[in-house]
Length: 214
Length: 216
Image (cartoon, rainbow over all chains, first blue to last red; front, side, top):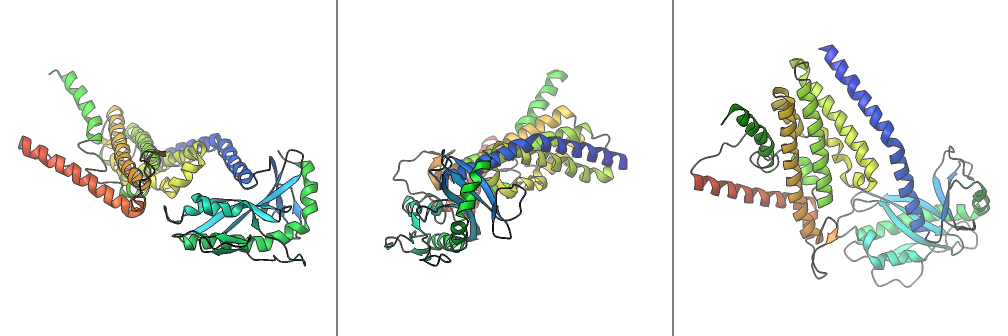
């Protein structure tokens, strides 16, 4: 009895190990490609990227072993910094929504957004990924710093469809009010934290392009 | 009919019965968890059906091969071990093929382990029959399961999204029935299919005047 169990167990273990080893490089390549696509989607002008980690001391390092939250800096073909892609998440209508958004320091604006994970209601809440008018908000969403450089001049806010008058407002979606507000809230919270840090450390990000990994 | 011929007929019967007479979804009503949950689009349904069919084929083959070596007391544990191994393999394979597909099937890939259909075929059929028959049985049941899932997924995607396999079918004016891609749509569609198939079965019985044995 034990012989059979041990035998079958060992055979199964071996099989799993072989398949795991075989598929691991493909899976990792797929993940890297998916990340690359997402970064270039939110920073349309970028053509190469470097991943930085924000260390506890508040500095950006491009060392891949560094601990800390990661951001992806996108550069154009001349190595000029286009913007930074940042991951942010928050509670949506159904579950946590995770987005990647691109912040362009030169324009002082969010220039692109992509929903990475969401379980919003199909046909209603998932319009945050498909609705053309809604996505239009993130071509240039103003996140200007106030003169002190520590906070944003205007916090991002979601308004009712058709009532957008300022560049820092998000034109909401009728029928997906909560999901659209959630996106606004996620971006507002994350941009308030990241925009001052990035602007302060801008030189490190530009300097880092010499050891670009791609 | 010679005995050789009869054997061949038995072989085809093992194959055919899973597709129609003993269809795992429409007749046995087994494995409802993936049937209702991931039949929201035709692609998801097809991937889920194929993954389940692959696991069933491999586990049936192995269980049937080892049927004389597995002691009765630990047979269920052994079957689960074998099934879980192939589910893990499928999980890695799907992730390697397409991350998006892996994401949309989510936890339901791992849940194939506890699909009563697969354990049921291992215990009720593969452990008592020769490898050839076990393979045919698994192929039949697997194809039957995949077709049933496609029937659900196709209808739900068509009505709920106006598309089939992601290709728009209806003209732009079509207002999608959003309820069909929500969980309740799964129940509606399954009920409609069961109604249709039972109705056809009853009509056939009334015609031939013979009550067909429904397997339990």
